[in-house]
Image 1 (cartoon, one colour):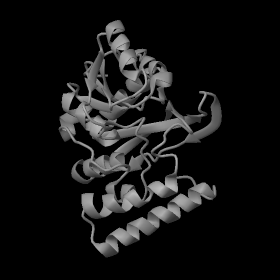
Image 2 (tube, helix red, strand yellow):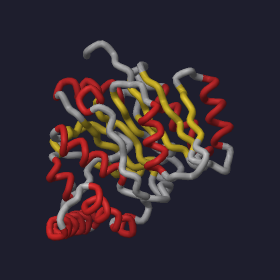
Image 3 (cartoon, rainbow, N blue to C red):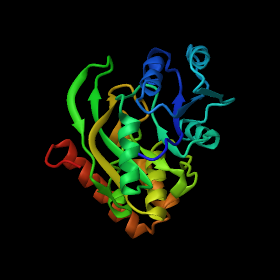
Length: 256
């Protein structure tokens, strides 16, 4: 691996006091130590802010941002991206976890493939952190066109290289903003790459914004039409592709 470059980890926080320490610890205990973690408090009403201050006192790599008004996950992540100082920018929600070698393995993989954006496989756990036995795999190569059909990049494993892309931000939509960012990067800088190794754990039942996948699907249309500026016929075609892939996935007919 090349000389270690700084990684900036962006974590939005909203009423996450019950799980926040575990998520932050999974970042701070990475085998790749050249990192900073930006915790962005999006107007929490529980003890999240107090816990964030404690975590920052315990480790100087923890940096804090407190928003004055609730702007949602996209705005919180963009505040973190603005503040980030690292070459690599990675994302983790406050209720998910990384495995210890996540950054070390993924950065080596990105450098090997000269990837502008990468992701990895991840496992599902239940709300209490117990393994469910389900694993989400990723394609080895994710082109812009493939990504238009279906978002196969989990935000908890995504990482992009600012040396290739510069700083890129998420569209300010309630949902699917991460997909909007991946589309922007792959459209401008080429395909993303997928590491076929489980490097993170996704906590099911706790992501309130994404828990109802079919209800959230309407935001795909916003991304296609407003963010990617696709014509009506093209947007309809890709939206139907998304619905088909989603249906097949839920029926376990195919794996995406």
